[in-house]
Image 1 (tube, rainbow, N blue to C red):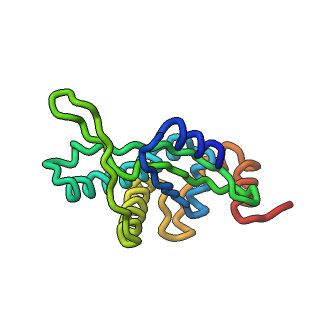
Image 2 (image 1 turned 90 degrees about the horizontal axis):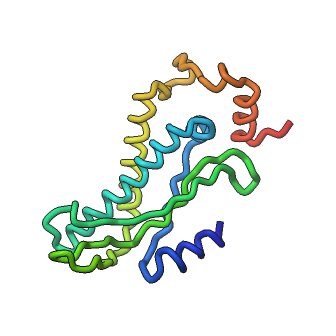
Length: 176
């Protein structure tokens, strides 16, 4: 992971400042993301969209832009599927530009403009908005449960009950 990040910083991002954003997820969501690649992609899109939205609005304010659409952040994300003890723990590591790219006037060169460091409150705001939007995705897909006995069916249990039990055990740290 460290070698991959170093390669991106040295060879892809170059002198462009980047910040490491991580999205950790609760165990029930990790379980679903472990086998549902479509859901995984949708959750990742929500996360990156919220980080980019924050950066665009920050750029509009700090750089005096007329519109947030003028600001273009960049990111590379790695999906990590395990924790340090090799338990199932789907989460995202994103290297995100610590600023935005702006297009030059009349076809001029694209330039990078760094932005100020986000405050703890701003990072919390990105996290809460990501949480709200991911919950909306889960509700839309019929995967949200307000209570344990909501009767939401688990498609993995129906398709492969053995794998479902292994995923649950891994998330809970149970070895058998």
